[in-house]
Length: 327
Ligand code: TXA
Ligand code: MG
Figure (cartoon, rainbow, N blue to C red):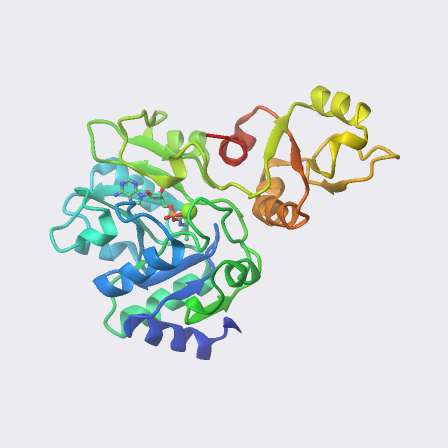
């Protein structure tokens, strides 16, 4: 059930979480599907609802960085510096886990993902949850496994219907793309997922760019080749290829749904056309809503104009590569 994120409903949501129920809540990145991170049965419900394979770890959301020591057994200086710089905010730190963290949360790994979200509703919910004796809320993005993340309460309801006790409606998420993930589990900080915080911003705090994770990195579904994917077959087309394909469209091309940010809709085009913002942050803000809406048109194919190069677009390029990957 979708309810407005007012203080009364936030109280109710915190109580439901403490009672082992699932609650969806807005963050500044995407909506989360939350469960009491200390309650194994509650966390198991998240995996069942998402149809997410067991073994894929969840991020634990905290009201305050001061609680970090309850979850991590070591906090390297670089991690502390990033936490100081970016929390509350769209950053997730992977740290060596404390002994008491349930295996179902960490996927059995020796590390745990932690984030202090900056969204006022998420923050109020976590504070209320802590006041009721809770310690952390395990929350993946509130979408079915492998699918497009949810950036509005309506998206969450589309994916989960009645499986979630409550959906707190805080409007559309500001960033619209998931948190940046940096792991401090080896000799060097490692970037596991591009996100709302860019590599340059991390480098300013760390003194240098984090290593980009290789294939030996801890398992993270956000880093699977096919992810964030619409049901409809989607293709990336550089501007010139898109123009050429549009010029050669015929009856046999079928219903095409286009997401363009620089190409204008041709006068005789008969499919579905979405104009996306030409700036990276604005594009990211609408990306998942656009992919969901394009998917809902049940076109034969989705054609997406390849986003520009440049750091402002790197997280968007990453998500679109995965959304269009076939394999
Ligand atoms: O912006 C976000 O991070 C959102 C909001 C709700 O906070 N959450 C999110 O969760 O995107 P999820 O589960 O969809 O993606 C979290 C990623 C996954 O790829 C997961 O494998 C990775 O974080 N992760 C979590 N704990 C990890 C760990 N201990 N080691 C490696 N990767 C981990
Ligand atoms: Mg996700």
